[in-house]
Amino acid sequence: MRRYGKHTDEDDIRSRPGRRNTRPRTNIRPKHEDAAEGMVLTVDRGRLTCLVEDRVVMAMKARELGRKAAVVGDRVALVGDLSGAKDTLARIVRIEERTSVLRRTADDDDPFERVVVANADQLAVVTALADPEPRPRLIDRCLVAAYDGGLDPLLVLTKSDLAPPDKLLELYGDLDIPYVVTSRAELENGDAADRVRAHLDGRITAFVGHSGVGKTTLVNALVPEERRRTTGHVNAVTGRGRHTTTSALALPLTDVDGWVVDTPGVRSFGLAHVDPSRVIHAFPDLEEGTAGCPRACSHDEPDCALDAWVSEGHADPARLYSLRRLLATRERTEGD
Image: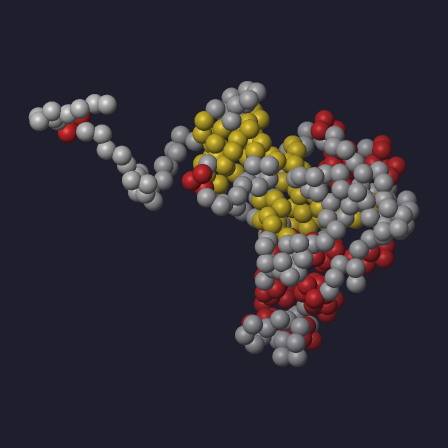
């Protein structure tokens, strides 16, 4: 044991730090001005695959970001090893402001929203015309989420060889939503992919749909270099397919400039996070007529000014019906 004399120096004295406040804390965070820009391609158990220039880099979120999560489509800033070499790991230090966000909740009573994809320009709602049967209420919910999140909707109807599309298209004719109708034969020979691809040029498009509708099969046709396992089976009793896409994945298109984001099949699309007052923004021909509405108007009540606006000839009554149908979808289940 060391013994100290009468004239010991302070530097010779060892002091044991306390259990608390051993390190000064600060709210100042590094700016990381030299960080590289990247895009999140997929997320798997805390590891994020990012595209940095032309390199695929594995990364993790920096502790300084706290609970803020990065999702597929996010533009991020990265530091560390950006070589993309095996067993290397970069660090995401900043998540840039998002231009759009597609969100959903597990159900309409769930207060916790889940961000499906960020910065997408378009939402392709894929539904089969048969096997499984189309679910208009689920389509309505996807449309509400698209309008709320700032995405343009696109309807992709598959399996037209099993049932005609006319009845389903009639429901959405007044919404002026672009659509593509495909058959299984067209998916096999590439014609369907070519017609869908024409709507994807220069855009980031998220694909969403009920399990078993052929969503991943279509993505495989659009990006054959990155084939994903498809379901190939629909339960004869429930009319539902198995989930084969387990995580969202962004894939670059080769023949045109754009990206597709394949997402897991959904069996419900909760809208607990959606403020109904924002859905009206997707109806510019009706929005001006809401000026005379009472405060906090649901646009589906006796005092709503939209009834007079439409009756005076400012907008098509079918458009008001479509708006109210979408707003009411939060009060109905997808199977109604």
